[in-house]
Image (cartoon, rainbow, N blue to C red; front, side, top):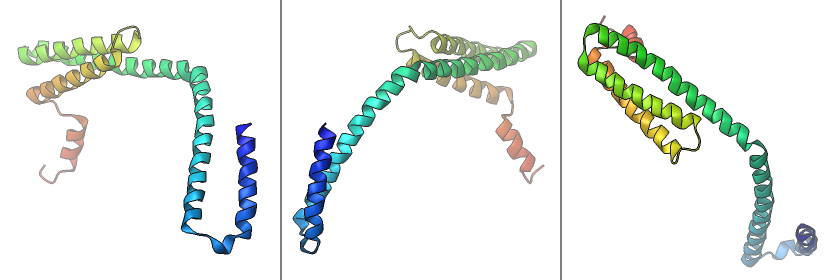
Length: 161
């Protein structure tokens, strides 16, 4: 109902404005921009309610997808870390083995935080665990002399072979 009243007022204003097009003043420009702003606010308000309804309808699906992506990433990282841990144990490298164990523990925390949504501050714990895990594995890769895929690619294109 508010929209209908405003549309009628807008039509009346447009009719009078068309008649006075030649006599437009800076105050009229301010009035027009104010009117446009109010109309934009009203349109955004109506869209906000629609967005809330969409979130209520499909928010659970997005949440499940996020859990799936985060959980599968943590699980695949755990497999990579387990492989590197086995290599370090076989080499007898205690420092790299311990770094892998710290990183693997962080990945377990990240996996649980991505799957179990009841954990307080789970998303913050997930991000923190992933940062620590990535840092430990980066340090481990440097200490063990492992090349990252990017380093291998850059070395294959370098002039000094």
